[in-house]
Image (cartoon, rainbow, N blue to C red):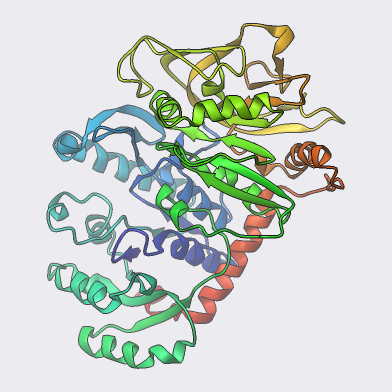
Length: 494
């Protein structure tokens, strides 16, 4: 089990690295996080929701992601409430103060069922568990579902990860160990220092001090990895620095207050010729080559945030000036004329009809049913030779085009998205498909539209799926992990 001294210590990537290392050694690693809180989700082949970080770990393990790897997913939706997902299906909404009262027993049952399903599907595999946050939040310890309760239940050998970049690494580690109960302390087999910059021998004295004062080995000092990896939660977006100053295209991405599925943008971030600029409501939109409105957990509240900040009007002027605007899922819904939410499901402060940005002639109706499925359909846009539109649906609400002569479908399958082009050169488009940019050929064709407008040479569409690039990153992560971490105390059964 990979535990951390805090949220953001690097547990997710270290667990992914461990999965890939075990896979390369001929084992079947089984990633598992009992409970995760994230708006970055994935849909498995059965149509179930799970955290993207566990999907990433599944790919690292050479497995198809399945909801059993993340049996409890909490999706924050504002006002101290979260949607509760058990084994891939939405089972209700909870308030933070009532969560452990109402959901502790059902959550533990879902976790045990997920473990059973995962081990039944892959007999002989080795569980690689990821904790959540800190394992020693004293006000929550007795009711913690996913850290030491699970570690004790499975007698897991635990690695404690601390992020030295945050500062105070000695206090992080010693304080965490001091707050463990006597029955929990023997589970910790070693310490990992993460995100170390510079020459590792400069930490030798600190390493010796930790080993003397804790009685635990420091199993490794992982260097700062100058690679882009998918973030687990939106906090990581704040840490992304501007990259690629010589990029030929600039794409503005709206940093919505309730942004979800931001991993959709990773393939664009990885394009050498593209620089992403994240724009919050209230910040200047500028004149980028394209604007992307990503997904949202609270579509109506995020739409109101765009209006209140003036960014909604900026988008209208940007399109009037010939701009290229693309919406993903909730972003697509915002582009329409009206959004009908009779049950108050999308964070609009109550039910009723809400005006959209009016940039596509769409009407969206929200209902209790949620679309969750993987999709592959022939693409109709951008125009050119036949390509497939791939991704997954994860949304409430169905949209309809009210003026078919002004709103063309982007795929042969009905309801996946629409687009329109104006005489001034503006293009407004959107799709319900998350992961649409993962397809190399489709992504390059979309980028080539932008390049044509700028008079730039076209990029080759003979581009592999982003999954191949992700595989290479995971291999490099595993190589660094094996180089800098002694796994023997973790893998030793004694």
